[in-house]
Amino acid sequence: MAIRTILKMGDPRLLEPAHPVDIELITSTPVQEVIDDLLHTMHAANGAGLAAPQIGVGQQIVVFGFDHNPRYPDAEPVPKTILINPVISILSDLEEEDWEGCLSVPGMRAKVPRYTHIRYQGFDRQGTVIDRTVKDFHARVVQHECDHLIGKLFPMRVKDFRHFGFTDVLFPNLRDSSVID
Ligand code: NI
Image (tube, rainbow, N blue to C red; front, side, top):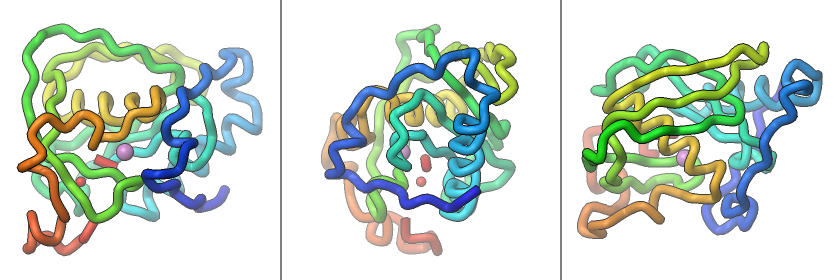
């Protein structure tokens, strides 16, 4: 287990689509080590989520969830989840804009439009099926993390660049300078 370096925007590895994990290999040591490293690295950075490409691993693995996150003090809790080979279905055309940040885009936040009601499916670290229907911030976190698996960072989703800026300027009272992961 290790705390890994988080790649920053500009690194071409963040733009590459990630490969699905062979279901038979989910419980193998290499995959379990990637999961442990993701969890350690996310916790060390107070992140709400982290995707494997952010530590330079091109596999479809994301981790997310928290009870309370100092980077998102007002956010509703999201269950701690390890999600492999995720598939998202959009359940409503309704989108909402809200603030996001990213550990790969340190010090910046933007209002990003996301679908408010989704279903996501995939596998946990034991290879058990995950199938959830979620809304709002939970749905936002999942869309943000899964975007990392198709090479998309939140700035690529911004529609109104008047709502894009430095965290310490936008949120001067937020102690952590660096909001989703
Ligand atoms: Ni991110």
